[in-house]
Length: 114
Length: 114
Image 1: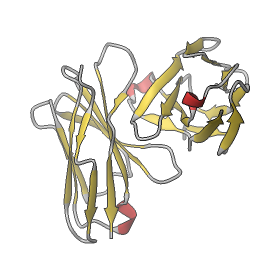
Image 2: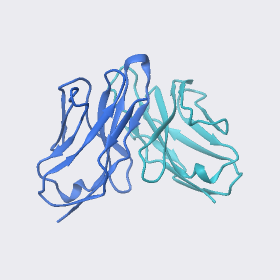
Image 3: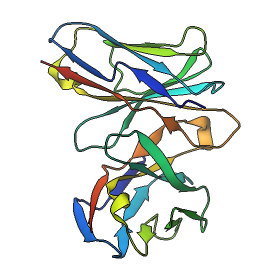
């Protein structure tokens, strides 16, 4: 079946450090790819998305590029802030066939220290 | 836009009891989703509605679980004869069909079965 694999956490970084969170997927077809973020005490929020190969999603200084050849959608940010401390989830959806379900990875907890 | 709301936010119950959760989607969103998230895992899809019709159900949704959306607005998720393994966060999301693919999540209902 379709699945998402994320790098395990938790991860602790210092402010202004570079961040990469790896995400790879397995899918029969061409998924849409998403990064969701969950800040402490809040619900899941969409961070960015990409719907086809080579698309780059970006938001709040975060970027991820849909790489079909490596089946990856790694999340990057050049300089993290304390306010980026959260749990990050990679997810996919298979629009072909009309399925609506999002398939999530396990999530990675990021803590950024000042 | 007041966001997706869920009630209650927390529920503690004894094994064998029935519980019911409510979700109010963003106004005019015709698609509504239920997910379950256990500790240390990403959300897992349970079911979704388009208006009042339940169009997709996961195998995770055992016969003790039932979801309804009678008037195509709010939805309820009932768990009968709760088991300790049902302890989880139950998330609701909504979106407008034909609009962005983004599913907007509520804050969740945390269930603890003793």
